[in-house]
Amino acid sequence: MRVIVTGGAGFIGSHLAEQLLARGDEVHVVDDLSNGKRENVPDGATLHVRDVRDPLDDLAELVRPDAVAHLAAQADVRVSIAEPARDAAVNVVGTVNVLEAAHGVGARVVFASTGGAIYGECGRPAREDDPRLPLSPYGAAKLAGEEYLASFSRLYGAAHAALRFGNVYGPRQDPHGEAGVVAIFLGRLRDGEPCRIFGDGTQTRDYVFVGDVVRAMTAALDSGAGGTFNVGTGIETSVLDLYEACAAVTGSHARPVHEPARPGELGRSVLDPELAGRRLGFRAETSLAEGLARTWAWLQE
Image 1 (cartoon, helix red, strand yellow):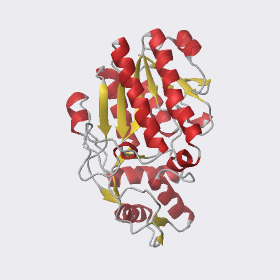
Image 2 (image 1 turned 180 degrees about the vertical axis):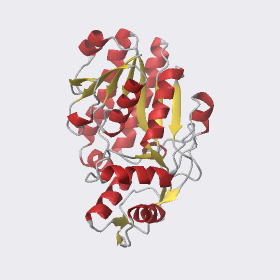
Image 3 (image 1 turned 90 degrees about the vertical axis):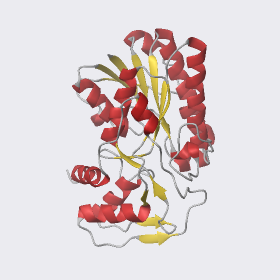
């Protein structure tokens, strides 16, 4: 398969590019390197330094991909609140540009979306047909991207797929960024800095290891199934329990610092992965303890 991976110099995209190369696919990475790193692009992949906010039709004509894995995004909820127009330019216009380029060469698109930011507060593990109640411009933009995928599929008879990720963590996630609590906790514990917990720490999330997310992406690329699929574990973990697990894997006895709850933060966010299991044959396999150990080992390299 010949695949374009947008955002392929970033956290999830670089892992996907590696996996596709390992199984013999031809991989072209599209990344503007604003957050992604050139050194993350695996040997054997071709890097095209491009911004998805600009049309990509010429690149698609050059590469003639079978599929596009679209992971390039503005992924920080707080940035989306402060700069909603910038967020929409990347996450909505960028997705439309990818869809137009893919349509021009008959390629299928697998889109990296989000679970928690789209569903809003969950009374139980969220299913794909549950109400979609985004609380941030980021969630609204990702939902708009999904709707564009669906409309292109209806208009052109395509089978594009959107994968709604849980809270993804693992090696290469930036421990100094604003997103990715696992990387932030482990990075601060490594550096002897205090970890901050906003609110009482009872809020829960569905933490899914990046290796499992990559397996879901490759399953979606291979299956040809269209539609929307949750990619998570179906297991809730509170922020307090996550901190204790991070402290245990690092051997730290430091205690976290509690700060006031952040406005609009979800109390509960967990995904029901049953549809992805049925349609894509995907199940998350990495336990939180194993995933944290692998992430901690990478942070010490």
